[in-house]
Length: 546
Image 1: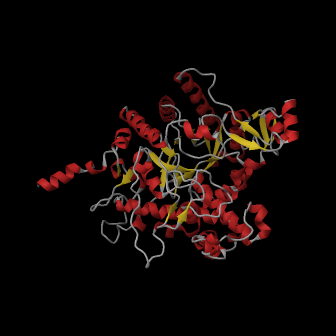
Image 2: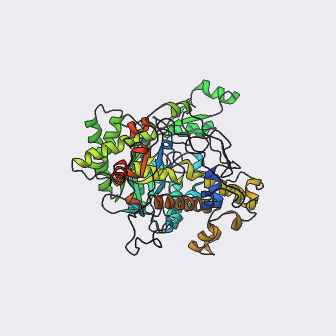
Image 3: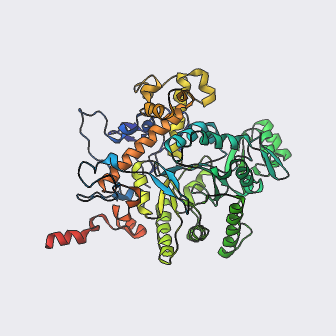
């Protein structure tokens, strides 16, 4: 088993828990006092692209671990001549071919495009309480940056204050809060997605959203995610709330209405209940039946008036992947998110998350293969997003390259939640009167923060850019978690610009599979990305033999 290092002396980062390949701890805590790379990047931004203590150190690469088949076993290539994808107002001069001139914006969609300033989007942030607690920071941060954010499944169903009469939503305050928070700062870049699962479909979420918000919202059908192979889950500690959820139609385990469970809860033997969603397509037995029902669902959503419809699928077996790509293409969807195993979750059975499904790089390699088959048959293949364990700018580049030209955006889950956590903790520590409102976990600033600064203007590298964007009067309404979100996104954007400039690619659409290489033969075999010393060897031979 590969063990990832817990600290990086060059960057001055330390993981509190056991790190995954992404660099995030396998268990990421909202109250964490630091300081993994993503945590620290949420404060000091693009400074994290460079070794610490400039002027008193030299630094050398310590990354020699290219074992097994993983995104870590792909290397990004750089070239010593040329430039591709320059904007029309730029030339191929050395003065214009600088990394700040790299355009990292992207767009996706079948007809009318959705634009994003950075080629990233959030994963689905659904009914888990941690998503609800930090929604303001996440939504405002995403809107200010100009990237899509996804409201995940079951938000209406778990809301005690929502009203559902005769199987139709009448009032949905939590869903409204989430949509309206994002739209308040939306400026034409990004989008707000609302996801549908079995229960959401039964509760008429799509009908409620289109009636109230029209085409301002993207609707997303959900087949699954990479962290688990069963429906969405949350955990509740209150037996009354568990009973409420059961009456709402959810599967609750253990059953809060069984007399022996009630007695166990009263005695303290049972302290929590897990709420589960249902599996989709259980009444179908063939790909043909799945296609028929899927197409009907898409047609129904279009008749409701949805301009953009997307699909998210998980790390099922390859026939499920093939169905997702083929049917999303035939239905002319606007995006297909493919989430591999190795990603993250707000709540999933741990051993399920560790042992089920196809790992991200293998699933994504197959996605490219299947999309290419359809393209060669003459299809206009659906635009894609890859997801499953991404946190850094090199991950973004590699995912875009592995899936090129089909992948337009990279979906990041837990990494984009970290700035919301740390920003809220800082806000609560600096302004105790706001601590409860922002769900802060600290009473005072830890040394990991105070050594950077003692005021928001000192702590967050992106503070003044956010103030410039929203104005001084509006700045008082921007949560610190959103400022941290901006700061992290700026670091990711700058890092991606640097990697793209090194590959001589000045727009996202020019990134290709030729810009990465495999560092071992196993990765080469599985991804079909050539071994690193054999990439462009034919050009090398021409040079030597000329």
